[in-house]
Length: 278
Image 1 (cartoon, rainbow, N blue to C red):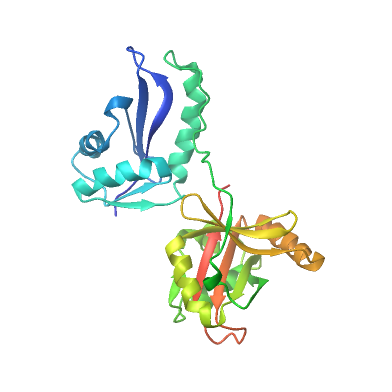
Image 2: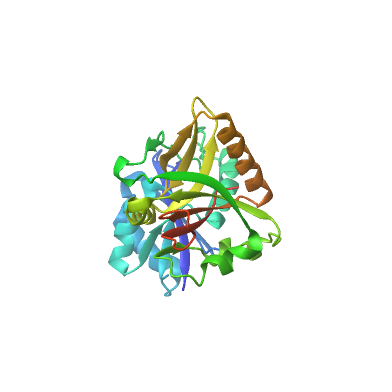
């Protein structure tokens, strides 16, 4: 499968006529292929993009374009649809984000730079909101799994919803098999499948402990969505949450979310391997 990572957004640049410029950046997941083009803001639309994609592809259009910026998504989707290209909204566009960071450092040295600061990959995120009440399960807890056991523990079991991509497997991240990978288990009871299906649609990305009054677990999902999974004031739970974050540091950020009906260990409803951005 040919995969592109693309961004289309206004830059802190102006052309010779003083018009604000938009920049299209395209690369593949390894960064070995790159394409860039500029256009005035008045031409920044799906039609311009649809004309650029064949030029960038040299006749070999991609099967899928990955997009991390919400403001770019609609235009790229519209353009890609005209060409029969699938679009995936995902935060996991590492090669593109690295390129954007490099370019952000170059802009101030360009003659047509406007002086406007440009945050290449920093997105405005809304405050977290509570999970819908009709989804919440009966209880939850922190847990750990040996890195070496994760694939065997879940890959071959009949789990209705399983998100365990190859690039997040401990072996592929260089994590020793004896390392304890932290996670959260939610016992959903009768809501177990409903919760798992909602999570699948929301596309979990990371589950983070946030200290506060009260403390909380925040689920990062989709492109910029944030959900309050749990809040707590109990000191022992807070200590467990701190340990959870420490273990994430030891597991290179890898963690998991498991939804199951109860604590019998007989059935699982959904399992996600998660890893936030570095």
